[in-house]
Length: 335
Image (cartoon, rainbow, N blue to C red; front, side, top):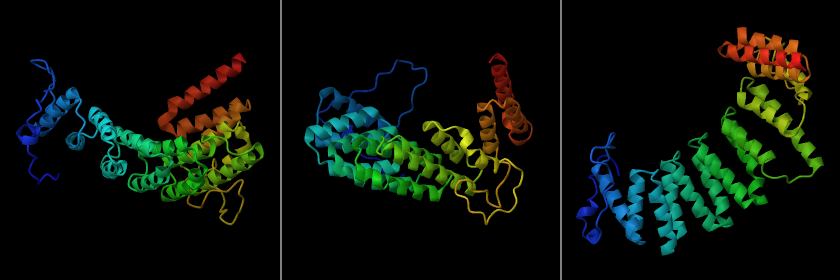
């Protein structure tokens, strides 16, 4: 309903609802902070409470719950009772999904919308999974970092755990990454797909996958060196697969100098250099190199980098870098 449309007729004035006695929301005589509901919302929810009390499941209940949900898409009780009514009436799930296509599009950031959608997909089973991924891709094109949408996509993939669904997922991530290489949600999803979706490969294939991911993330860092998401992904690949950070030290060092020579013609998949427009040194690279030094017991080298971060390159976190230095030196003294 647009602001220009007249408000709907109150349920209290509709003949088809005359058999229902509305149940008002309980409030103390003088509530400390009364909520200023609109008259339309109070009327609709008074009748919803009456319906829940009587246990009625009917098509008019579906209309009522839709009305309440459109007024307040986070009304969990309305969603729950609607779902129970859908099941009780054996309501066509494809019809309900059509409504959900509209409501999820309108209320992307409302958890209850996606929970109801999940319940429907559960009922529809595997045949609904592939179309659901298509729908999610459409929604992510509008809001590329919406947590609820990404979480729903991961649930669809994990719950059905069908190889055909997983097969196209890295291509999907590439599409999202090409739109915005700094999309942390896309980076998280890539890690989920590659490393947290269940081991599908043998150990030999795992080695190949680790190498592929290291090459991939290094290339992405070379394109956007100050992208924290990519550096976090690099850390994640190494930590998850129990690889020492030191194996990427030659690569990391390329991003810790003020300005490298023009290296645009160099082709090195293991150590791709930063582009000519890169802002160096890169804070994330300095931190990474300091962590390498600390892990190898080179505390003085690490402390020198933390000092440069606190005093020059990342002054907003100066106290943190001082803390890292103190912590590392204390650990060295007590070792």
